[in-house]
Image 1: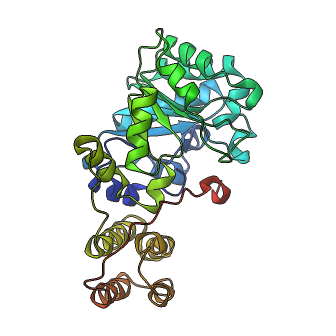
Image 2: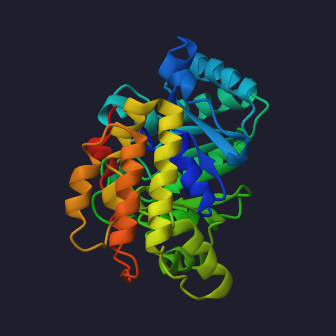
Length: 327
């Protein structure tokens, strides 16, 4: 997720149970031009493994060259994004825009498979619109050119995030006897119960969590606990929420520098401290501070002020991430 799944955020997710993570998606053209921002997105910590680097593009030669660049960084897999619905991406024939031309999608994928020694996977959607839900054909053809797994979001590009994700076609792909690769389902999973229910109902090999983790990185450990025990794990304590806030802040400052690191963290506190009564009085201070030490001092103050409080679990809100996507 652009400007979300950077290394500091991935640290928090990994420590709370994420099994496999992806980088922010990277423009193949940007990698070839050696754009600093694109190159920076190739970096990851060893403890993040297994880690996939995700690229996007609409030109076979560019995507193949980008795949070779990714190869050198030695991630665990290379993922191609054919699912991003943002106009600036899809409108220029990349991301979900490739869903308009399945022959091109197949050629792009085959070019990547041939260009790299890494396992190649794909993330995509059901189709471009309601009249072109061709994911069953797509899955077979991409498998035939060598992908090792397919992640499917249960909406079309034209839906963006409107309505509910339709997992029926995801299940049909998984239960197609021709399909031998792992199928990963994605869309609207925001509770452990829903994750297990959908995994069992549709038979998918894995569940991909996106928007829910932005607000609540603890969802990974809660899903795993529920799958293993059938019981709900208690939500994060006040101390755990403060610890994650500090950890994310520290990694953000270390990765991006004090100015960008502190500024970009300001939107996270509302999520991490959600459910605390009258937290606005502290949050309004957090978003004005200039140094990591000042922020940590206020977080310590919050922890002392609310010590002993019982936090209620509130529903995880699934935001329309792409509405504010910077691309």
